[in-house]
Image (cartoon, rainbow, N blue to C red):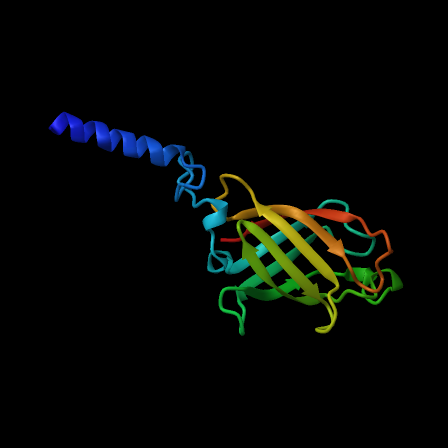
Length: 165
């Protein structure tokens, strides 16, 4: 009878492992939560943003603060700070401010943020994925300039976000 129970238990374990809908709670190699299991609150804190080929006038790095959204507790809010230097106030970055508000969500491992330099219109969008093995401390994706100063065919700008200690 014990051998029979062992066979049944082995069969059930194997059947669960083959279920494509089953997800491990942690990445077996790193011990990190799976990207789909990350919650917005795990992203709260300071981040550094690095851009590859940012538009003229915008710096290659910025600092981002992510916090709990005041109205939607499962969502993100925050601020991005950029050193605009000599470009501040120029026509080519007219739609961007040194500090811009952020709001968005973390959905199935995708970081989706809207940026607003004026508090009214969306001046940039962020779409990124958690870097495998980063335990939610790095995201890569693309930022899109949607400001009034952006050309109609504004390119997607690759970015990397890294959480600061």
